[in-house]
Amino acid sequence: MVDAQTIGVLVTAASVTVAAVYYIFTLRAQQRNVKATLQTREAQLFMTLFNKLSSEEFSKHFLNIDSTEWSSYEDFKAKVINDPEKAVSLQMIAAAWEGIGVLVRENLVDIKLIALYCAGVTRKLWEKLRPVVEVYRKETDFSRYMSEFEYVYGRLMDYMAAHPELLT
Image (cartoon, rainbow, N blue to C red; front, side, top):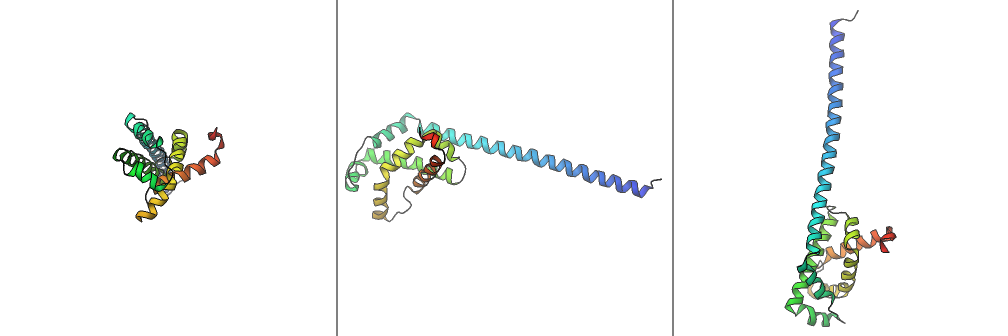
């Protein structure tokens, strides 16, 4: 026959087992909630970027820089930096892609989203601006100027190399 002490041990063991199972289920549910919250936050950040980059105001700034041609850093200074309207457009573009770079660097927005949404524009802009940015960095001793833009470009090129189907 089973004595009272054995029954107590069995009840305690069963209680600990139930508590452990409950804890595991609670942790799993919490992990699913955290993942869903992170995905929602990433979607919100992406939509904020989408709204900014697709706005009429931003499009005007982009076209203002995209339609400007320069042959050298001195020509760039004369046509962009010394032109208040174009200087503002450049600043708006730089700020937008610096922000994208920070979000990608901090893993708040997946580079895949940037690749799917604005790979061509990112590539076109950085490749157009890179030569003058490199000279500007040296001239001003501001080595981090547009560094996050450069970072997102590099990550984007790596991603595109791994996903050549996106190049077509």
